[in-house]
Image 1 (tube, rainbow, N blue to C red):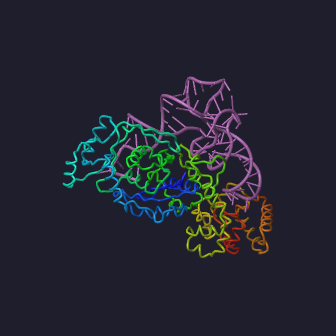
Image 2 (cartoon, rainbow, N blue to C red):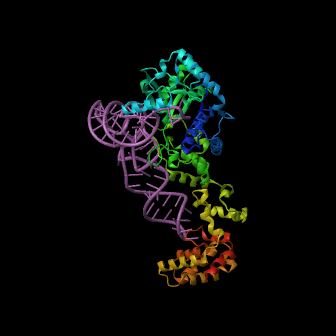
Image 3 (spheres, rainbow, N blue to C red):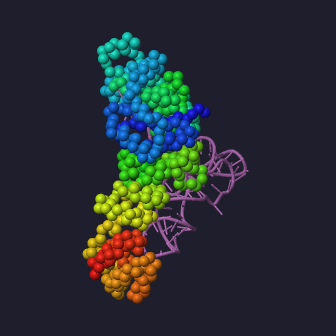
Amino acid sequence: MSQIRVRIAPSPTGIPHIGNTRTAFYNFLFARHHGGKFYVRIEDTDRARLIPESLPKIMEILDWLKIEYDNKPVYVQSEHLENYKKAADELIQKNKAYYCFCSEERLKKLKEEQTARHEPPRYDRHCLSLTPQEINQKIKNGERYVIRLKIPENREISWVDLIRGKITVNSKELDDQVLLKSDGFPTYHLAVIFDDNLMKITHVLRGAEWISSTPKHILLYEAFGYEKPLWGHLPLILGPDRAKLSKRHGAQSALEYRDAGYLPEAILNTMLFWGWSPKNDQQFFSTPEMIEKFDIDGINKNDPVVDLKKLDYFNGYYIRQKSSQELFDLMNPYMQDDEKKWGREKILMIIPLIKDRLRKLSEWKELTRGFFVAPDVKQTATLLQAIDGVCNRKPESMQILQKILDYLKNPAVWDNNDVWQTGLRKIADEFKIKHGDLFMILRIAVWGEKITPPLYETMKVIGNSESLDRIQKLL
RNA sequence: GCUGCUAUCGUCUAGUGGCCUAGGACACUGCGUUCUCAACGCAGUAACACCGGUUCGACUCCGGUUAGCAGUACCA
């Protein structure tokens, strides 16, 4: 086969959600796997729903995920309007399309009547019988018109889908699709066929919601006499309610996941499995590995339901793969200004202590609070009393803390973790309490919560004097 | 409604007629490690939608049923 060329055709009507980005990613992987080209084409033919700000966002997503495309600058359909007009005229000449002057009202009424009769809503070809003279006259009068595709009467249209095998649809299921709108812009159907041909697209990998449009596209290819590409319809990505993922689900864009503290590696790895699986048990894939392993034959027919728990799992994994230096940069956006004042060196000491505990970068704040902020004395005291109660402890935490404080005042015990711990364990023995309980008391005293990073290292980062000060304040 | 697509653990999936008393991952539960929480290691619970047929033999092939989803726009 000659060089493979694929494309994505985002429409700037909003920020694409993560499901659309999956489709882009699959096209990218497919192209790279086969050493082909991957293009981006902006389909901005719907002027009513156009949101100009969404275009830079689309590009930002691709950029963040490092989904590289081969046509820069990207192709924008609205810059090539004359092409579509010419193409539509060509179809009129070939008698494959016709002018339609029907008003919106008439169409609406027609549809209502058909629905009432339980018939599929279909254009009734009212304008097909217009004579050339009538058409010319109407155009001359400035009547608004659209151009419709003339669907053949009763024809089996089929193609061999790359993912689903042979699919056949009878043309009588098809409506005389509008190709050119009354505002002069093409519809998706016209524009996509014209530009795919122009760009010599060889494979169309798109969501399964396009299956029912494919027969129209085939008809269009034949009408123009263009060479058809191969189609592969990807499974739809479903929300937790098993309906097609959409904004309505609060479906997030990749940028929102980024801001929530997810790594691109985790997003990519998660999207990889939304419709594709390797033939072995491999879970983690770098981008080069994905490119190497990804191909059509691994794509599933079944629609996957998104599982964000898995995304969290991947994210935690990829966070753990990062060096402290890398995490320092990645977590910088989540740090408060007064935290940054601690300086790079000090913060680099914190990172290894919380790294295994991070699932999202945004958890920085809750995991590190105790480093930066001394616990509230009153609340901490209450917490200590509470655990005294639970443990039915004879000597109260405060007495034990006094002893710990005395011990820790000696700078020599801070030399290393072993020495430090051994002494504390001795104190626990003296009080006849569990070692774990003693560490819990100290943990709460220093941090104000029952969950903290490892104590010795934590207190070293906080600093001896500050740590002791926090204890002292409780007594 | 009509047309099309799909159907294995809760979720993502492996499985292409005998390697399947169905494998892996997430999640969940337990155990281990441990100063807490994690991380890590080990173990456990848990699925072939249903009915027919083909076959010596069906998760795998065929037909039907059911269910889910998608499409049915001068939106993409």
